Length: 310
Image (cartoon, rainbow, N blue to C red; front, side, top):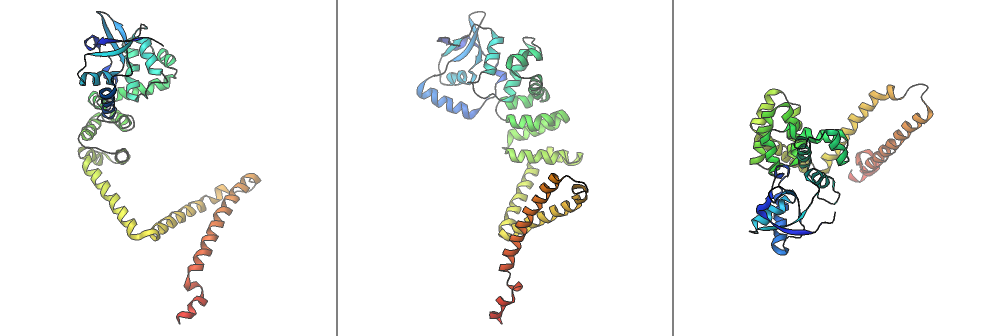
């Protein structure tokens, strides 16, 4: 779509879809540096509205930065295709930036609510199946408004929203809101949040309430355990790691022993039997190598090595 760009006044632009975008402070800072140095390079995309105004379809961060820079005009491409086609085009363009799941969900919702398109129509127009559209819509429908606003403001990641907060909100809205409030105050890594939620899912009601009421306490204890584990590993050295791995191997072998009557049976096909035996041979070869090497270093196992110590 090759449409000539021109300057339009910022006061003519209607930010109708601002609520569908996720704010990214890192991108915002980079964009401001770029516009400060080189000016606006990429035009924003708008569609004409009544009263000589334009609805902004794409370029919300650019418009925000241009306002921050004290400018009164923005370079824009004016699409005459109407809002529906413009939204659909921006949503599926392969050369556009990677959309966050929440942004996709919000725009899909606008198409269905504001323009009364069915799920089937939207799915067909964006080149996706209905299940993909439904999953996106379920994401924003599950999140309470204050949690959704925190995601859109860039204070909570889309990953946290989709993997942790959305399923949590479906089960317990209040807990999702409490956890969001904590994330707004204290930075929590993806790994820590994933661990928190994994522990939450397998805990009883009393423990869950304590975790949600004081997430910082749980995370502090988890960090302390990690530090203790690291210190213990340093203390025991490679010998400790070896013993730990050998203990794991021992328990795996016990499990294989229990499975033996089920896995090996009379009238078993030669192909299956060969494959299973080949696996055993490979493991046996490694064990024999380890045993040989260990014996060669074991002075107590070789009397000839001890004669010089008499």
